[in-house]
Image 1 (cartoon, rainbow, N blue to C red):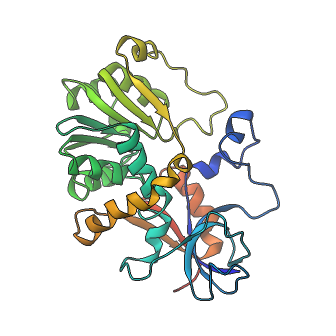
Image 2: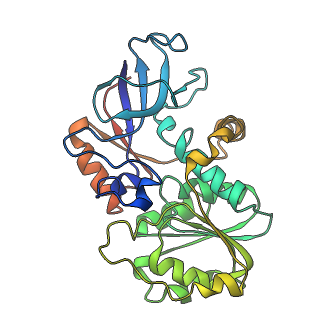
Length: 303
């Protein structure tokens, strides 16, 4: 039994609120109407029959959206409280979000110093980290976001070389050509739709695309039809979808990589924390409409 302190709001949760399809069931089971939704949470053990966990342990993993949960310890990670970071970080940079950015960028995209990198939804939980990882590699990095505030965040806080507000660009292809006159080596995909179509026109030969999300497409009755998919063939582009669970064995390696950068303040991490379980639905809906700035977190109880 655990007491929940922080709950993670994530775009994939919207998919699980729709009627399941064979495609979505390949990822996760849909939420059940009338039952609590579930997601990543940071919690404290109140009582345990499992000898691996004792009263007072701090843990993170899948819990229901509620104040207290009874959970199966499989897939639950114990938190090292000696690492002096906010506990909420385990809903994000030190949890599945961080591992998603790490695995998608390093494992799938195989970046090299000096390459050009484009990140969509770049100020979000994953995007803000991918851009910073790319800068640490010595890459040229551009991000897109949906407001001036978010663009300013990319340029002034996360260290992106260039950024643009896609809502103010009448022609995404022209915007990308302006930022990448010689083309894109790596695209970290979080949006899909028209953005992906424009990116394909601007990819370099042998470019790599890590498909982390397609938030623009999840809630459409009729999804966008892409016109430029043949460019994947013509340019010999490698495009791969992935889920973070595919890389769970890399988690210890990821922590060894990321914690020193956090301690040395070489990584910046922005959270958007909403307090109160009763405000969780509004926070999640706001996330799905792009109203959050940084990682959306729900604070259920004080530490």
